[in-house]
Length: 143
Image (cartoon, rainbow, N blue to C red):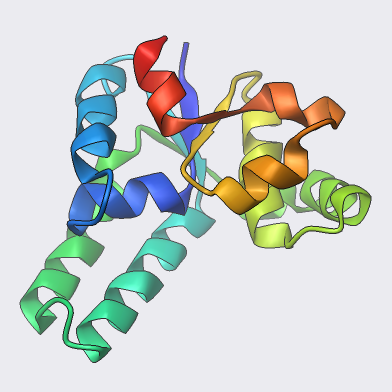
């Protein structure tokens, strides 16, 4: 079964951060099965790489390489335009940013789970019907 990842996980595939080792282990294990994401993921990861380059946390070449590599890591990109209506419904229901809800709508469309390290989002989903649709990276590695 293919899983959906958000930018909080995918960024760790191209930029060293806490939990990068777990994110890479997840990528190596799940990539043959397939990893999906909304196309927004590329822009989000590239934006964070740009910010890190601006702050001097990574060099310019690393940011450019991150932009090149991120598009190669995901097996299937779903167009955000096809997910935006459902994502808006979820965002309004949860009172949560639509960017994150696009990933949740993608997981719903793929009938799978969203893997994330976004603890704020996971807290927001707790005690809602959407909680079963998302899983923390560490828990995904154990399953």
